[in-house]
Structure formats: structure tokens, C-alpha cells
Image (cartoon, rainbow, N blue to C red; front, top):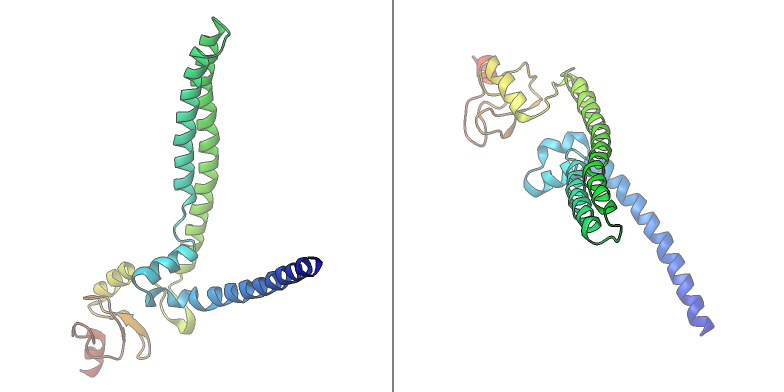
Length: 204
């Protein structure tokens, strides 16, 4: 029995150590390989949603706070009616009912708004920092940086067509017709065949 207990403890320790090592290595691989910012436009569908979820581009805290607020509001309201009819305090029941129904919900609302304001400030600060970094419009190798494909499309269309936004021959661009990634040196989009006006202009 002692031997069995000893083996169980040793097995638990070994598993604990191995699990920590695997968790650390997995976290590093996910952060530096899968979640690398350069991969954002490579992913589609479920993989893109998973990328955005792990990069905390969509926060669920606000939704959870809302649900908790609704639940607590219903609970306080129901409990106030319970105090009105169930507590053996006579005329004081009505006073307790009003205090719980009115001030209980007011206090809950103030606490919820305080938590929500802190969350919104944190969220907006992160978005501002991200946009300030994107407004430089310069990434690695002096390539333009776009916040999303719509931003890229607007700028390229204003410049005159598919990929025509001061791109060098080796840069990766988006086709403004279908959104497919292509090289700025390509004469046509390999997906939809739309001419690359910048490349055509160079060839002409």
C-alpha cells in the first residue's frame, strides 16, 4: 500500500513537471509562430477567428459583465419582494422592500458602470496605441502597414487600381477586386485576373 502511494506521488510530480515544460514551450510557439503579427492576413475562416481570439482582439469581459448585471438586477428585485412578504417585521417590511428595490439596484448600477468604464478605458487605450503604430504606415523593409483590407483597398483605389500604392516589385499586395494576396510585380491577379495597374504602368 505504501509503495502504491509512493508511486502515485512520484507519477503526479513527474506529470506536473512535464506539463509545465510542455505548457511553457507551447505558449512560446503559439506566441512567436502562430500569433506573429505578419500572419494576420494569411489566416481565413476558423483559423482567423482563433487568431483574433488568442490575440485578444475581441474581448468578452464586457458581455460577461452585462450578463452578470442583468442577473444581479433580477435577483435584487426578486429578493426585495421576498422581504416585503416573507420577513416578519410588519410595517418595516415595506421600508426594507423600497430600500432593497431602489437603492440596491442603484448601488449595483454604479458598481457596474465603474467596472465598465475601467474596461472601456483599457480597451480604447489599446486601440489608440495600435492605431498610432499603424498610422506610421511603415513596417519591416519600409513596407506600408494597413490596419485592414478595407483600408488598403481605399488607398489603392484612390491611387488608381490593383496594388497601385507606391509598392516595390518584391512587396506583397492585395487585389482590390477580390482581396487575393499577390506580388506587386504580377501583371494580373492570379485569382481573378484583374490587371495590376502599377505593373502595367511600369511595363508600358
